Image (cartoon, rainbow, N blue to C red):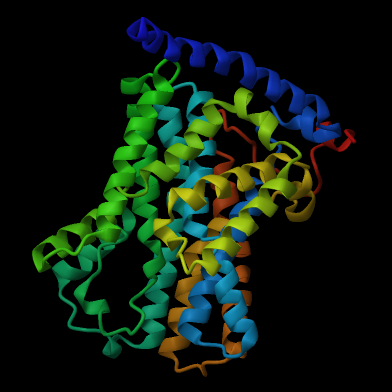
Length: 406
């Protein structure tokens, strides 16, 4: 009898889950108000552009504080506060949400890959030209010995998917050259792996979520191995190379994929509840600070990333017109990410004083370059995307179809 009861427990729990969760979500959904509920199922209207800009700004500010060394209480406060909202994990979660939705929206694998290339490479290649201009401004004499093979290999890596490969002739530069681009190969690997995940694991089927969970746990295990192990010199080199791939970050991307795939189930917990998610996350961060526990930065612990992901998605889908009204469809987050370290590298190379003036100049100039990149390079190419999830607007106003809504 005990054995029969133990066999029935999983079935009872499964039945209870399917009875309770949909009812709770419907109950929450009935309390949502106005345009947030009405637009939440329309993935063309959200605040992800604004959130990506804030994530890119977090990265730029943290790098600026760490390298340009502005002093005082404000610098310490900014550093401590922004460490709780690491931009790179936020980028990866948002990518999981939007890229999986974009893949499902595409007519073919070719269109999907074409759209991804249009999103990344035009801005990246122009940034490479600007990188050469920065090298010339700093003086070729400040570099190491440049050979033709080294130069061509570096150039080919920057033009393709190996932006994290460092050339020896750049090592004499104290900050390297645009080292923040290490995330670009990881992002491109996400793009490449996603169709394989959909094809092999079949997320649309019943066991899709469990299979994605298994892969996410394997990725998390790689991250924990890199963070917590004490390897030998040879192993440290291997772990360093592994850390430059998608392996320790894939689980963050899959958090976003899972949220998007299960949106009809989880939306009731997220829409219109950003204040509760924010309060809960702040309490968690306060407890972590009191206990002297690090959130992990780019290797963020799931204890912090999961509620942070809930907060990010809740902010994105609550009052979803906010981003369009503030930014007017100008998505400058990618440009800011591309150029902020180049500007900092230039200031350091020109011996700019370590002070708030240099820090402010770095952020302002980076935002200006990001705006130029969006207007002159990214936006014209993005208009060539096929069946884009969200069409590129001229930025003159909120689309009329949504402006009429309350």
